[in-house]
Length: 434
Image (cartoon, rainbow, N blue to C red; front, side, top):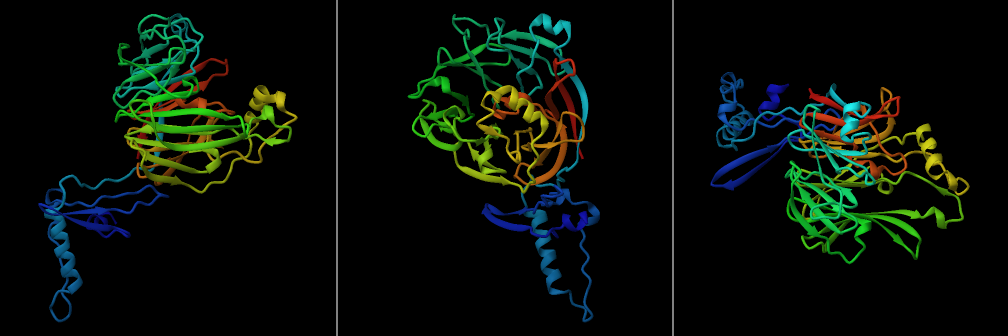
């Protein structure tokens, strides 16, 4: 089968020939979303094994070569010797295996001494170094850094009111340039740290709206991704909004908006309460956004705000789990007479991406082991390739607050796990694709 596909016999394959100097040919192989198999065509002679460079054509009874086979030989020769240099056979892996590499356990006394007594959120740089973000009310430095093997490295981000110091930290994502932005909710400043903890830039956020309600995440092209919540006093509805801003924090366009309905404090009627899911992620020059009102429909934009793709999948809504009900009663039980449980859960809880552009969507469907949930995995083109039971941790009621709690980088999967003792640990798995 592979030999037939090597020579272009792929159903749905499209050929596009461009005039660039000499003609080049590119095949775009159809990908099978259910199995996650994708193959690229060999398009240069060096990549074709010696035993495949000679193509035998069987003559017909009258001794002449069949016309369609003659054309096939000509096409194969053209693609083999005039094609682009970079295309090789590549199989897209569809089976994921996870093996525990190490853990960072907050129950350890030595970690308590450096201030890591809880894990709320974290991030990972391109070298595998891990950064834990401390609670806002802590009087210690706001960032604790560990190396790629889980050893304590340093602390930085001094809390205070002096130059380069932070009063009310809002943690953002480490950028693709390995820069760590922290927004100060009190001073309306955006501090950019390098991976050694030095402040390399400091910018005052100029915005017509209250900065305290929005966060501005730097993008690789100089723009900012602005996320926040807006309360409409007229309708008494709360909305989540994602906007693209230029380098002066001026709005370029709105990328997405989700109306979560009337705030429960203002309603007298029974209201079905579902988790407020509004997730935005940035990876490899793309912006991914999804929310519960649109269903299983994740939009993909480039950094200029152009819609590139829509990732969709049929799904069976999960039943409302007991953990959600318990968390619901703890957090908003005082509105019990106004709220009712939903019949089903939203299509997903949150999502994240790895270095290869794979998208991992955590659903509400319970996984194969305790504290695990089923994750749908899509390739970089948005095609479904597999499902995997993976560790999942996050806020049941407000999943948007759980973003920096699962990461996939450097062939590692990082996720928070709560132990039976109540302490949290970061579990780091090796990711093996086959």
